[in-house]
Length: 231
Image 1: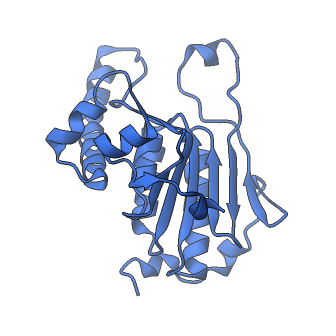
Image 2: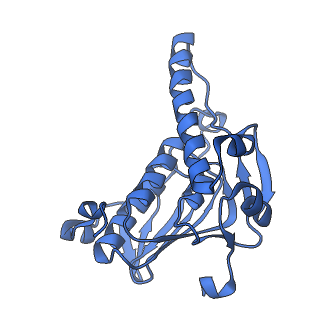
């Protein structure tokens, strides 16, 4: 048994859970919720972001997440990985993601969950894999990380909002440096690069790449998804 097996002992309460935000429909675990908001102009103007679309299919062992990386997504993936690994620690799990990115904290939570899961995880990036979503795709099992042919990839450095005073800014800046260092190390390890090699791809406001370029230059995934892999 995997050294992480204790986290995935049979948990009937988890498998039977039906929280108010979780509903079952046609064998799918559906989770819908508004995204976690930061201090943005959109929030001040009273505008709402679109809800995420997330599904976890126990029979297929597939997790589909379309939307921002936030508490809802990290909760969905944690619960699904725990349930699927409880059922079978050897059978592959698929995580399909289409996301512009989002919260760094939830990105780390998802990457940690994937690292702790004893079952192999196939990741498939489609549509757009940007910002925090790149680490999620890269955290799949080596050799089982894919991008669809038309997928766009964007990497950049960690970004922050604005703060009310200098003391708060200094405190957050120190924490930011630690998070940035962790992010660079995790991306380097998962992409098979040195820190020196990965840093240029994680700097600036946005480094946009087509799927094949992201595979070759950064190592976010291993290859383009063949048709036989999806269907």
